[in-house]
Each structure stands twice: as structure tokens, then as C-alpha cells.
Image (tube, rainbow, N blue to C red):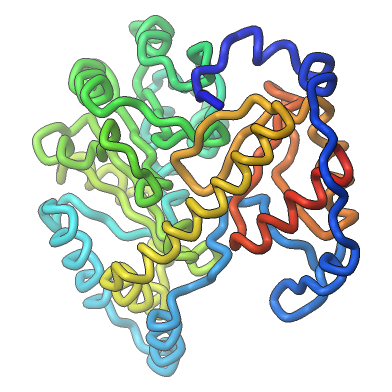
Length: 375
């Protein structure tokens, strides 16, 4: 299935997709009954989590050992730990340490960037379909949020973002890879866009799923921040490093911009979280293992989409976006009965489902259940 979806594919929804679904083999009840999740039988109360784009393998065991040991010294302030993590990231990204800030997840700096936009008295431009965290702080403080239409294949349209800008635009947000549509923006076009638009407004590039991308047309924009105070790049350890509830993230920005961001940060990153991140970011083998398994699971899902003639967007992250041909909330509720929890329904695409990747064997279980119930 190509990721160049047409506007017609987007709008057709239920009738065409449901009518073209192939009959799938029923899943084996015995196989389902033998499946477990975290050592417990899979059930509605203990489902396989394919909903929040989490790492199903959990925190790197080496990092977990460090975290546990660090708790023995968690009663003591240790401000040098943050600098140690900053140096690790600076060396990996070839970015000066003064251009990196550690936070409690990237959400801390999404809030800070949204606040900066609002206090400047400006509007924010975002893609019509994207992650909405940054808009909450901006809109709460009075910024107008302007949504730019997507391309026909549901990818981010840089031209639409340009056209949506006004003389009052102070921030443009791009999530790359995007969420909930896991598409990417071509690196040369994005770099030119960032350099052009940053002459007027702050450009915030959210790279939460950066590590998962295997496409030569993609690149981080972190290299632009050293010489440009109007570009901010954000990263998180919540996804590939499984720090979703441990909370570590990063902002990459020019030192002048960093001073402004730091005024709105909470500074709540814990010593155990920071030391765990140092160990996790240094272990490239574990990251590769997680990424390899992610693509195994993606292939399992792609196969199902092809068999059932479900339009979908090729993923550059750890989740997929596909047209179920029926109300997404109904699909979610039905799958949960068999112990599979997928993403919520989206108002802009009520028949489309976002499915986070689980372990390959868990993903296959989800596919068997889906075919049995909807094939």
C-alpha cells in the first residue's frame, strides 16, 4: 500500500473500505487464551497496550540497574548529573552543551515554547493533523491557533503552513515524524522552510520519534539551532528509551533562546531519571534491538492492511494510521474485549485508527483478533 493516499481515499471511509474487506481466518481461541501480558493473562483489564506509542520492551535493563542504584542517593541534590547527561547528548549530536537543556520529558519545552509564543502576543500555525500539546499553553494564554491543511496523502504541507502564516504569526510547529499520521517531511525542503520562516517566526520542530526513522530523505534539524535563535528542536526519551513515566526530554536551541525557554521550565528532572538516561543513551545496541523489533511489527500490520484493503500511511515511527472503514471508537471497544487497547478516535478522521506497535508476537495476536472480528 502506498503512502500517497488521495483525498478521495480519505473521504470514502466506511462504504468502500468495508465493502472491499477480505474474509480473514478466525483466530485460534486456544492460542489467544495462552497469551499473556506482563506475566498475566491478556484480558480487558490487562490488555496489550497498542495505544500511546510506548516501547513494549521497557527500559533498558542496564539503565534500570543505574536508576535503582541512583535512588540510594536521591535524597541528595546533585546538579552535576544534569551536566553529565548534557555532555552525552552534546557528543552524540555534535551540538554545544550550552545549546542543550534537559527537562522532564519534551512536554516541558512544548509548554515553554507555547508560552513564549503567547507572551509575544502572536499566533501559532500548526498542521491540521498533528500532536496538540504545544497549542494548549499557547491558546490558554491567548494565542490564536491557525491550522494548515494537509497534503492529499495526509502528510504535512509546508506550502500550506506558509500560506497560513499572517503578519502576526510568532510560532510555527512541525512534528517530524508527525503524530498521529506517522509521515515525515523531506529533509532539504524542511531545512529551507526552517531557514526561511525563522526570519519572521519561531520554528519548533518536534522530533519525538526521530530514532525510529529509516529513510534517507529524513534528517534532524538540530544542526540549524547553533546559528539561528528562531529554531527550536525537541526530543524525548519517552519513546525509544521507554522513559514514558520516568520523564526525560531535551530542547536544542541557540543560547539566547535557551535563556527564554529556561524561564518557563519546571526543573523537575530527577537524579535517578537523569542517570538512567545517561546509561540508556550510551547503549546503542539496545536501541537497535527495539527499532528492529518495531519494524518487524510494522510489517505484520502492513500485511493485514493489504489483505483487508485498508488504506494506510506508511510509518516512520512506532505506530500506524489506517482506515478501518468504520467508526474508530467501535473498533477500539471491540478489540478491548479481547485484550487489545489501541488509540482513541480522532475527530478529524473518525474512521481511522492509530495502532502503536507491540512486540511482534503481541502484534500478531492483535491482527488475529482484528481479522476474526472485522475481516
